[in-house]
Each structure stands twice: as C-alpha cells, then as structure tokens.
Amino acid sequence: MIEDVSPQEGLARVQAGALLIDVREPNEYQEVHAEGAQLIPLSEFQQRYAELPKDQELVMICRSGMRSARAGSFLQEQGFEKVVNLAGGIMAWVNEGLPHVKGE
Image (cartoon, rainbow, N blue to C red; front, side, top):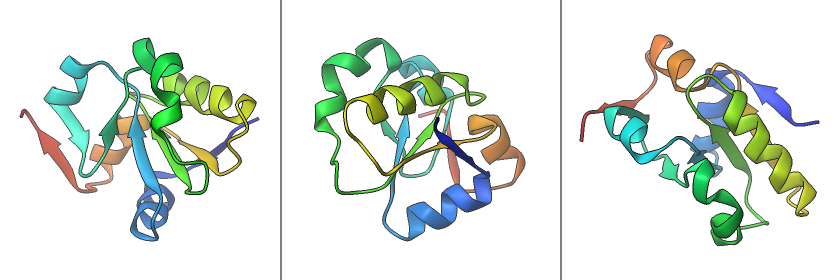
C-alpha cells in the first residue's frame, strides 16, 4: 500500500531531493501544475516509468490523489521502494498556496 503524504510534507520531500511526478494528462498539466513537477501521463505510464530513477524518492501527484496512487502502486510492483502519494493532489497543493504554475 502506498503511503499518503500531505502537500506540505510532499513539498519538504521535494526540497530534500525527491522528484515530483505528475500523472495527469498534458491538457490538465498545462492548466495548473506544481512548480518543478515532471509530467508522465498515466496513459503513457507503463511505457515510460523506466525513465524514473529507482534510487531517488518519488512523490506522485494527480488532480485529487487517485490516479497518482495507482501509478505509485504500479511503481512499487516494479520494485521502486521510495514512492509516496500526495494526498489531495494538485487541488490540495494549490489550496495550501504551494508553488505552482498556471496556464503555460
């Protein structure tokens, strides 16, 4: 089972060197995304997950936390050990006033 972390905890982990991985689709990402988030859409995830480092912590994020939890669980099944899910997704991240980018 993947561990959920709060937006504040997710930000702290990213500042400590974790990668923030956004699994929403490109149009959603363009509307708003967490600063520094790397986009790997869930629709491409099984083909692209090998791009991710196994030796670095990964914080998974989506809109509300459901898709990112699925992606994180998939990564754990592939042998990734340092994976957490951002509870509440980008909506919670933005509500907390954490660094984000709107409309690129």
